[in-house]
Length: 149
Image 1 (cartoon, one colour):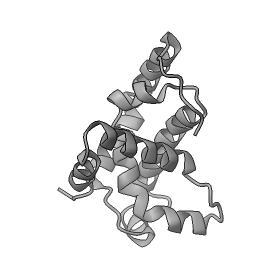
Image 2 (cartoon, rainbow, N blue to C red):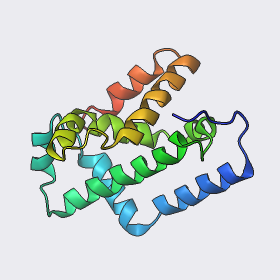
Image 3 (tube, one colour):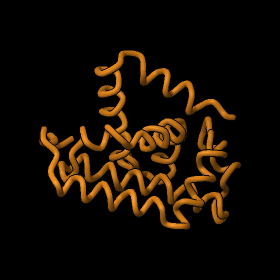
Image 4 (cartoon, rainbow, N blue to C red):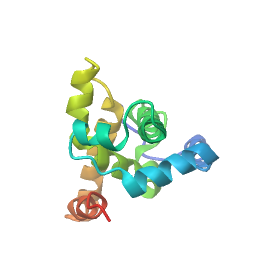
């Protein structure tokens, strides 16, 4: 991952605000609501059962995961200050933890070992950042967000 500058800039803040505005867009908001309430796959097979190709649910899942993978690409490339992002965007980590059990299967299916690599890289850095600040906080977070309600 590209080394993030240590001091956030106004450009970082403006990009974060634009990303936030995108999250408020009606279709993405609906997709996020579905994802948070329903997406708890334990395998690729689970994922395909809960959101089969061609379904609205599949569209919602892809919209949410690709949004956060895109956002992660900005951080990974050093375009967006990592620390500033980590201070206020734990949703990326939630999304990664929910889809992590499916990633190996998705990569194999699509013959793309780099699929969702941005999301994985940034989520790993985020987990380290959390535990450096508050040891055990990442594990506690995972326990909460991966348990179906």
